[in-house]
Structures are given as C-alpha cells and as structure tokens.
Image (cartoon, rainbow, N blue to C red):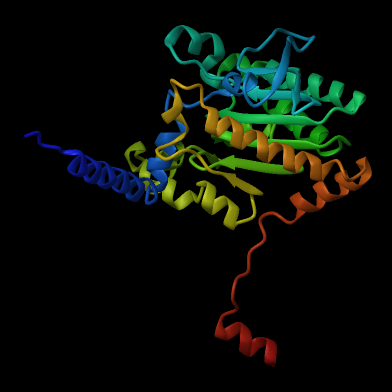
Length: 306
C-alpha cells in the first residue's frame, strides 16, 4: 500500500509562500535598497529587447567621447517611435569597468542631451530609465565640468515640448539621476529608490560612520511608497514577489510587461496635450514639489491675535 505525502507537501509549500509574502511586504527601507542594488536585477539593456522594440543605439557626445554608462537611441513602444535613454551597469568586473559601474561622466550627459534635442526636433517622445548610484565624482569628470553638464540637462529638459517620462528601475542617486530625470511623469519600480544622497554618504556626514546607513535610509524617506506619498513620483510599478531579479532565467517577462503597460498609458495621456500645455504642466509639477506645513506654536497664535 503506497503512502502519499502530497497533502503535506502542498501545506508546506503554501506556508513557505505565505512566509515569503509576509517577509517581502514588510521590508525595511535598507532592505529595499539592497534589492534595488541586486546584481541580478534587470538593467536598462534588458528592457530594450522586451519592453521596447527596434532599439538602435546612437553613440558619442560630439565633443569628447562616448560614455558607456549612458546608453540611448531610437526605439519603439507598442508601435510609437520614441527616443530611449538609460543608465547601464555591468554584471561582472569587466563590464562594470566598461560601464563605469553605471556612473556617467560629463560626456554621458552631453550625449543624452544631444539625443534629447534630436528627439525634440523630430517630435519624438523621450523615455529615460534611471539606475545609477550617482554621477562619477572623479578628477577627470570635474575637469570636464560634470556639474555644468548636469545643470544644462536640467534646464534644457524643462523646456522641451515633447513628452518626457522617467522611470527609476533600480538606484536613483542624486544629480546623476536628475541629469536624465526631469520629466512630465516620474515612475518608480516597487523596490527602487530615489534620493539626494546615498544612505552611506548621509551616514558618513551625519553619524560620522557609514555603518549607520540603515538608519539614514529610514530617515531619508527614499523608498517608492514614501516618494509617492510626498508626491515626488507619479506611480509605483509592482515587482514580482521577492523582487524583479526573481525572473532572471526567464528574461524578466513580468516586470518588463508591467513597465510597458505603465509607460504606454502615461505616454498616451501626455500625447493628448500640445507642446506648450505640456511645458506649462511640467513647470507647475516641479514648482509644487517640496511644500510642507509647519503648525504654528501657541506663542505665534497669541501674537497673530494681538
């Protein structure tokens, strides 16, 4: 007589699945940052062949060189012709050196600006996928004016008439992310983060110890849920349970499709407006950021009554 363990196996599998759900639905900000940095997460080029079609890369800033940390070119999103830009990291040491660990040099931002101006000239929507710890802070970057390159991008992206959508797919670090992040709509993946400084950098400044990075991550309010609450992003794109990297072997179909659906919907909405209307809306969007209300103290109340 055979003995069946199917019921027990099913019960154990259900318990494991519930435990995974409990764990990943209650992650700390620092744990989400670890997921955002996971080396198996889909990078920019992974989305190029799945979320987008017919990607043709364009190279060079026409001034100094071709920065491999920022990749861009023509592509299609569900039949719509677009200009696609993004930061690209490497998965091994050799590729990370070539991509400079996803930290662009000034020529990377100047290449991005050249492509965005090309898109604006021909009326092509611009989509930017952000995944960088920050712009490269080395001596060479400073000599070639990294701060000026980012500042010019901020200014020029604000006055482009074509639709611009930015999506944070991993790390969104400081000015390095903002250099291609001024947009009509800002989207973020569930386990990505967007911050003015890395938690380690914040901890080194405020706590004088990088080991305080988990506390800094919580204080900075840089997770997707917190950013949406503050109105700094427009929508959170859900990831598969456990993070986008869970589908490495399958080619990330779930997150790639989710990103495609979300981008298509926002792009369709933005294309109902004309250029001046989009610029006006974009300006209003950024003017509204950073507002806060501070309740008056009793002393101030009595002073105002008098």
